[in-house]
Image (cartoon, rainbow, N blue to C red; front, side, top):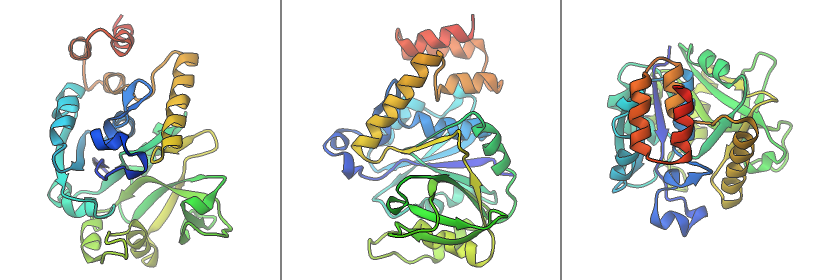
Length: 289
């Protein structure tokens, strides 16, 4: 059972410069909330309450001002600083003490997930005892992504990084579930030509041991990578359209915590005071009427 999660919120966000020269990309707004709320909400929907957020050196204070230690959400948030981007598997090296002897989930800080059955799928993935499970989703342009080829039992047969011609259109999303061996496996990796540890190399270790499987987000689900300006603004439009049409908020952290009985009405009122007079606070008021 996975009870711990890591959000990798470092990186320079160069594809979105000069916006990211002023602030960490994960703190930029996606419609009405900071981007970091969306991956954090995914872990909370899964039921994970112990979370490590890895940030760039010198940006820790910005995240603390927003999320503090997580107690107002009924969860525990700790932080680690990354002096420079060293690739996704570096999260497990930096987070070794946090992970301890437990299994762990990893989500990228710029990934957006949505779907009616998302919570059910997430909880299913948390039952992982051994190996690694990745979340995959069909895309129209697989040549832009890491792509997985699977068999009928959802086992990964091969992984191709941005293939020019692929039999599969299943993109590997930025959400992963690992057993505790991930820490030691990550330590054995050598930097690539980019001078970073590559997630594909880590996944291939599990594949060789026949311990790598896939979970499908499903046709009704949505996965968006906000790494580029176009994708970033398309995500904002997506959130805006759904929220205004259906009347609920996506990634409202307090609502998730409240429904999970991690916080009470008093905590919601404290959150309203924290945010001040705004649309988000008005939504929180409706939760406790």
